Length: 208
Image (cartoon, rainbow, N blue to C red):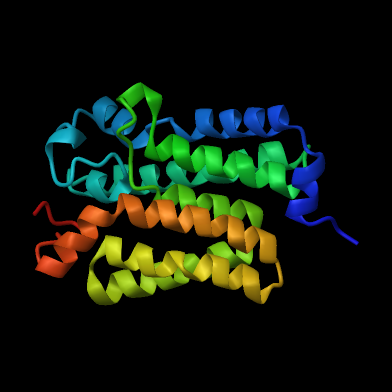
């Protein structure tokens, strides 16, 4: 019988979890959106739109190619963290690395802990740990984004599907772990929720 995350926690040294988290954090803290737009000579991401470093704000520079590249790279750093560490460790260690990547994107030390909203990295971690859950997330996000044109609303609704997918797959402990991810994601989107309520949230591709 496969050990549960709770059982793994009882015999996994804390220092191993810390190393896994730091490896993930290092990967997740790479600000691809900022690096790509600076290299391309576009307007400073911090001074346009939401000031965010993610793909949605990169799209507001008018460079769809850079936005797509940012989306893919921000997603892959979450997937890579899970695969790199998970290949030599337990599911708990893989999830800890994924959490590190997610936190690295949200709070990168190189940018004064002012990072992105974490949607792409959240998806990358989900795909790396249990790809069907990540696929469900992507489908829901794309459908809602097409219908509403609100990236934030689409991501927040889609994020709820990941722990639900894990629960359906009877992966109870990972589902509980992903609730932490969802909580952080919603917390980072609190300003977006306020703007949605006021009707001032910018739509995809719009600067204001």
